[in-house]
Image (cartoon, rainbow, N blue to C red):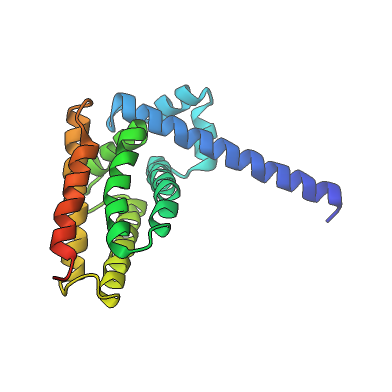
Length: 208
């Protein structure tokens, strides 16, 4: 392969990545503005100012594009949260940062959270199972990471003994409640409640 051919392939890959990112961003905008039912490939293509066929070139179908939306939202959340969590000197502070930082993300990225909410709320099979594999994978990965933090706190003697899976799901469910309230009431002071929630879980976690 010549150097020129390698450069052409690198450029093509860059263009493809850029186009995929654009399509994902447009899908997020359509989901946030119009809802899940109206987020057709045709409408997303119109928002991106491309043909429907251009989307099909990059994504096999609508489900694959929506999986990419889920992955992008979780990628941004991880990018925002992980450095803050890793900077904490104790696991207690790391959990607090996870709770408050997650809520700050909900507040600061409303379109991404609206798009994710639309997918989570509507993209389920007839039996209630999660339809989008990326959503299921991301949920499991988040719970697993939270579980690692909780186990670290136990090992360090910071936390009492408890069921890690149950505690992780409880923290996740409490955050989901804050998100629902924030979406219903845009002026809701979610951060104040997140701080209160962090206090509650600190009392529930810490060994006395």
